[in-house]
Amino acid sequence: MSDARSSADGDEPLEIEVPADPLAGHAATAYFWGHVAGSGDVTDDRIEVVANDEASAQVLAAVAGGDLEHETTTRDYAHDTSITRTEDEYTLTIDGDDTGLLGRSGALGLPVDGRGNYRFGAFSEYDRELLRGLLEGCGTICFKSSSGTVGISFVHDDRDLLAFAQELIDECPVDAAYDDLSETSSGGYWFGVDDADAPAFGTWLYENCEETGLFAPSRRRKLERSLEQADAYGDDE
Image (cartoon, rainbow, N blue to C red; front, side):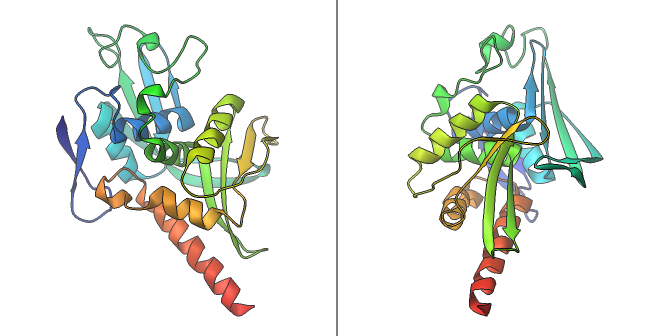
């Protein structure tokens, strides 16, 4: 076990506890593989994962090594391809070497099967970190001005991965209903947490996360702002 330094909250550097084996069951590895599943790609000799928050990208690099590159991209909004958005992207690339990829000979030694499906059994004790990584990899948090509520949703091309995210939500200690999976205009799938349950679910998901540093500060700030806006909306009624 080792400690890697990262500025996860944008202020003083924070000690991130990282296991020696990036496949071992641990909060940091659960967060890492949640991100990889949500916004990454795994081949026999490379892992690439994309983050929109510099601090969380640094945490991912602390967990598994690799090289970080930063660029600004413009892409279609997943729910509506007529809308585009420009955002920062931090791509972490982990290449294999003489010992293979993360010390394994081929992708089958990773928590990914031959069909590209993820196996998360090693991280079953760290559901919150795994789910947080998934949300930051393929989810959105927003304030819905039309209804004055907080919106939390997951979007991905892999229907099975989203079904797994729903299973994790079922097992979390707060009640969080969600929609059935629906198709997006871009050909993928998505579901949203029920608006009435989104505040409690989001609060639980980021509760005490600063203790480990395993979170994207910009995403937590977005949640906090959305909760504040929802509270203010209710006060105005």
